[in-house]
Length: 170
Image (tube, rainbow, N blue to C red; front, side):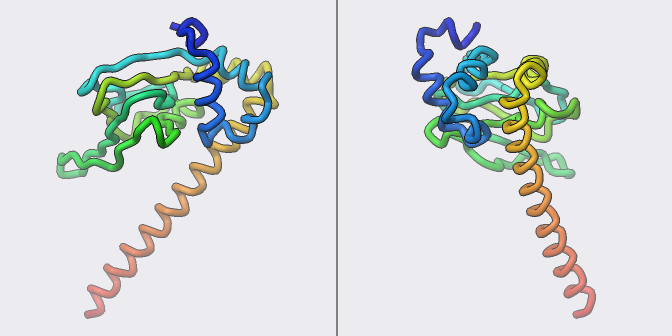
């Protein structure tokens, strides 16, 4: 179902304006209209599996209403909660699926009845090819997210390395 058929166009556009990944285009109504045109509304019930870690996916999700739990599996096979994302936080997940064809890095489960604005990789690619002035800022925002995660991971690895060296020296 297209977001346009939900009868909530003004609310969807307002939501898209508040999503950080769309910040660079948020003041351009024409760009937001084009983005709105590729959004699909998907509904999930509390407890539904949205994404399974290890599966290949091609969709990004904006939490329109409701909430989700992001879970990771340890090497020992234990699940742990990384974060709870709620619609009022103006959040999204699965954005890397717009860029690559790799496996999902986490499991996502609806913690309550929820609605999502979903963008597929194919639709995003078409949008970016047709309107580079829309696709490029969003791609830059994804690149910034990746850079931030890489810096955090590097910092975490250095902390672990320092702790191991300290343990060995003691």
